[in-house]
Length: 243
Image (cartoon, rainbow, N blue to C red; front, side, top):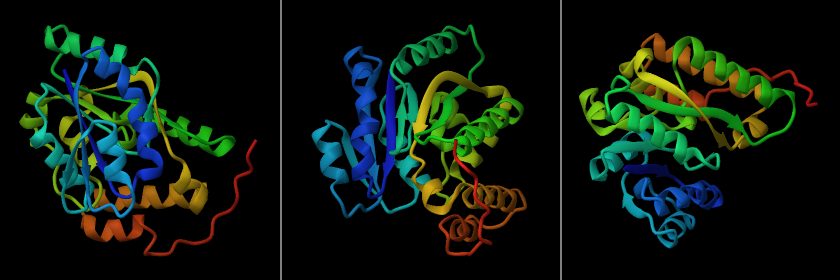
């Protein structure tokens, strides 16, 4: 059975949509609990989570420590970490259950899984970005946090779990997992493209790649977080025309 952990911060506008595809898995007994770990929302996030029947935890803001807190509270033998603006495709639970069964029966080595990356936007730019993420996953087995992370508790604890990092907590944990222990499932996790629409695709992609490069170079996650959140300016982008 799965314990789902969702970190939130002012996620009122997207949380209900993210929670909806989880209901069939709860009814089927695949999902044991949904834990929403809130980092100090000032909107109706907690109310939405409570009305949906989720367990609500309150922590200081910071996705790494929110995820770690949720995992510590969770009771299931499998953990699924999801972002509050990522919506799983209908039927995701069947594929997840098949993957978990193979791992639990020893037919597959102890390993984790993520979902296929998709954006809720039309045009050339989002499709190109989705293709880039597919290539990244195929070659490097480095899924984004937006793709979720389905992992056996024993493996999660074996690698030390999520760290209380200002940013890059998703990159950190998948690197500790290693490419041989991560599978990409066929079901999609469709993520909000709001940040890309707001910043512009080229600028946001450039910012993300810069953050990854800085992290690989050993720059402090606190400094990287300032760049990711736009506190450090990047040059104006050239437009990508949509189809």
